[in-house]
Length: 299
Image (cartoon, rainbow, N blue to C red; front, side, top):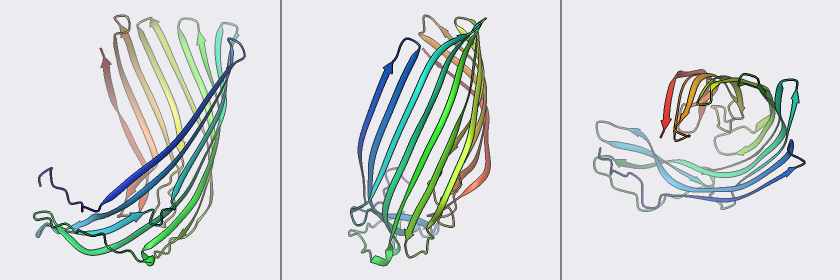
């Protein structure tokens, strides 16, 4: 098929609207103690009306399609709030120089979505596309209402230590606690989401040695945690995604910083990654691993 082929209909619409506000404040008590605060707000609205392709008959070139619409009543919203407060302090213990970071953050998402879904008898042919000129009608039974909230807070601490002989150490951890609730009202019988609470402690650490000003050798280990907002086969969000990564490498900087290069080996393992199983739902795979070498340079 030619790259110029477009099976979309003339009334297809996707409109994304963002309203964003951010605030950053910083106060230095002295050269060694500093307090920072960040606040972000985003309001996002997605309006959509489209015929999506599904099954293709390779013998005839006919494509089955289904209609999907969002923000059908014009009242949808997605509100996101983020607050973070961090204290940085520098001090010495013997021959070790410390940069200590202590912080906490709070994230909250509230959403309301009206979605229309139904199969349409109107096919389109990839060899001779004839477009549907008018948007198909939507009945109240085609529309589902979904609403929910995700509050999420975290606490973290990290110490970066400078030792003699150009050795640097980093160690810390983060604690996350997240909740997820939601309600559903649709023709598919999607159940209301129960109150789910997830929490995890994620450590991180690293070491760097700089034998020459232009050369650094390093190794690191980190874990992460993320609450999923993707629906599974039962109509409920999938379990949180977690990951851990090992990395080791070498970096160099030459010609007064004009040339930079790095070579690294990484081993990344993720759990509960979502993969699609049909047009609407996903499932979480048990584990996925990615490892290899990465080389890059800038001049």
